[in-house]
Image (cartoon, rainbow, N blue to C red; front, side):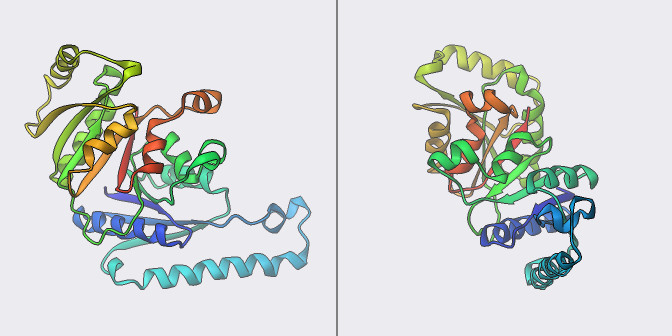
Length: 276
């Protein structure tokens, strides 16, 4: 949480994410990379693509407008005392976010999200979904304004397989920085049913070498993993839901779906994802 990337389209949801990023940066002596992706027609920014001189004033107008919005955002009191780097890039949003996160060696992305449903969720998806699916660093997704980002309960849903070991270690380190109670959660579904004895043995083996004494181990029965996480979390105030993602792409993503993306879309509270 030392170098936090916050993509913004200057929407209310993006500002909600920036407010949370500011709180994290202040608590961890971090800095913020505030990024706006200016998606202009290619002819406006690439003179080899048939750009005409009359197009130049239009591109300058969009750049000035973005910088005016940056200036207004930078004047907000919640950013006082923070080191904030402002960047405008001419890229498609998703590719630009990935490029900037690598260029500046960011260790966390904080993004706002409107959520999605129905055909939009399945066929189009949002930039937030794409980042969640592919980011190599943790992605914290914020839906609503959180004036005090105090996390008392960190719910990490996992299948306790060795494949999840690295993501698990990242998640635990993040939760410990928040000083939150860690709830490790296995959601048992009818399609992938495992007996309680088998799950408990898997849990015990998985955490056997862990140094953290702040775990609770939980099994929750539900019709889907997403519903199980939401059901388990609903009675835990000031909670953060966490899950690992495989980064599925293409047809694999289409047919198998992504639990992490479903959770990001449908949860009202904050969600953080860790790449397997």
